Structures are given as structure tokens and as C-alpha cells.
Length: 115
Image (cartoon, rainbow, N blue to C red; front, side, top):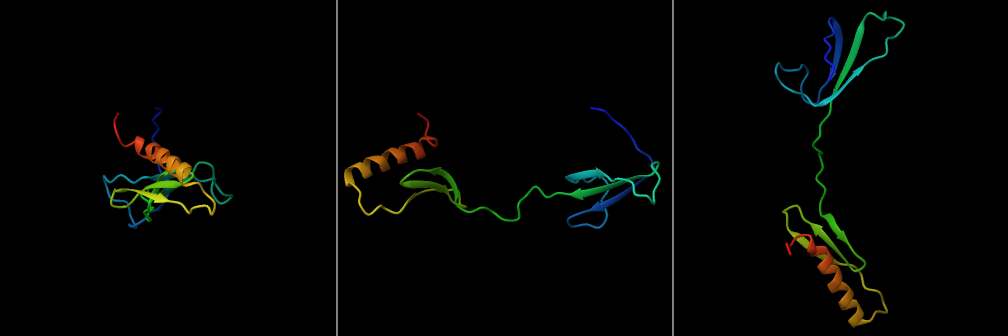
């Protein structure tokens, strides 16, 4: 890691919830050295810091853990795992369908159980 200290810089901050940075507080984000305009000489350093929130403001519901031909396995917001059956085809064989669904359930739940 290379270390450098730049003196006398102009820093513009774009923060999520605060106007000024608080001493000692870490802010996740992106620091960008701005391209000097014609108004400024190359000796002057201008930077922009944009705070980035790593937490999504929306929570994804019912995350798919398994996607099969006949079933899906989802994880609900409360942490419970749920098996969901897809729509049936009009012409299907009950025995082969039941066997295929059983195999998909074994595949979907296989990752949750130690063997």
C-alpha cells in the first residue's frame, strides 16, 4: 500500500444523512479526484466524496433457493423455507409427475440436510 498526504485540497462531500462529516466517523463511499477546469490551475486539487449506502433500502421477498421444472424452493422473510408447486400441464402422467416432483424436492432440500 502506498501512502500519500495531500495538503490544501478542496473536498466536496455528498453525504446521505449529514451536512458535515463528523470527526472520527468512517464513511463508506467513493473518493474521486475531479478533473481541473480551465478556471483552476493544475496545482489545485479538487476532490468529491460520495457516500455510498451498502444496505439496500428494499428487502427482497421470497428469495428463490431452487428453481425446478415442477417446483420452486423459496426462503421467506421470516427465514422459513417453502416449497411451491408450479402450474400443472393439461396432459400429464400422475406417476411420472409424482416421481419427478419427489426428485426435485430431494434436490431442493439436499443442501439443508447433512448426510
